[in-house]
Length: 223
Ligand code: SAH
Ligand code: DHB
Ligand code: MG
Image 1 (cartoon, rainbow, N blue to C red):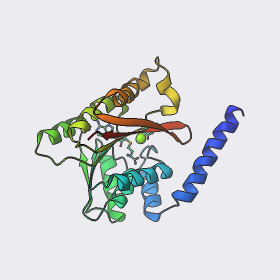
Image 2 (cartoon, protein in one colour):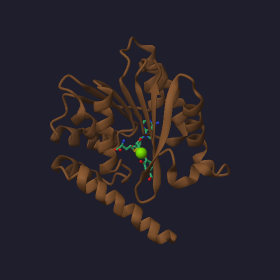
Image 3 (cartoon, rainbow, N blue to C red):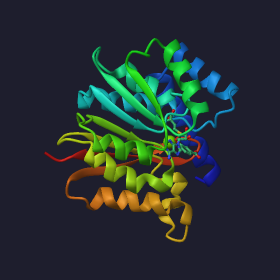
Image 4 (cartoon, rainbow, N blue to C red):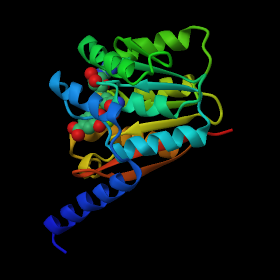
C-alpha cells in the first residue's frame, strides 16, 4: 500500500469510528460553527477524540476537571457533558477573544453552571492555583502552547492526588517527535519522556488518527 492509500485509509477509519460513536450533536456543531465564524484556529479535538475524553472522564469518575487551553470550548463541552450533576470544569485560556467565544458556546450548551473559563497565562494561573488552598483535580487535560507542556506537567502533578488522570493532547504531531533535530517538537519529546520516566506516573502515548497521526498522552498518578 502506498502512502496516499494509507492516508486515505486512516481518514476513512476515523470517519467510520466517528459515525458510529460520535454522531453530530447540535450544541457541538454550533460551537464549531461559531468558533469558525469568529476566526478561531480549527485546532480543537476531533469528534472521536472528544468521545474518548468523555469516556476517560467517566472511567475516572471525575467530578473536578482542569483544562489548560480552552479555545472555543469544544473539548470543554465534551468534558462537561460527561461530568456528574455536581461536577465542575475550570478551563484556562490566554486569549480573552477565545474565552468569550467559549463562554457563549458553553452557555448555549446549558453548561455555564459547571464550567468556568479563566483568562490568563496558564503558567501564572497554575502557579497561583497551586499556592492557594486547593482541592486536587480528578482529571487534567493539557492542550495549550506546546513549549510549556513540561511545565504544565509539573503544575499538574502539584494539583493532583493519587489516581488523578493527566492527559496531554498533540503528543505525536504527525511523527515530528521522532526527529531529534526537529526543534518544534523538542518540548513534546521532553514531555513524553517525563511521563515515561517519572515514577509517580503510570503512562502511555496513544497514537490518534486525524488528517495525520497525532497522539494523546494518558497518565495516572500512582497510588
Ligand atoms: N482544548 C481546545 C483546543 C485548545 S487550542 C479544544 O480541543 O477545543 C490551544 C489554546 O491554548 C488556544 O486557545 C490558545 O490561545 C491557548 N493558549 C496558548 N498559550 C496559552 C497559555 N500560555 N495559557 C493559556 N492558554 C494558552
Ligand atoms: C494543532 C492541533 C491541536 O490540537 C493543538 O492543540 C494545537 C495545534 C495543529 O494541528 O496544528
Ligand atoms: Mg490540541
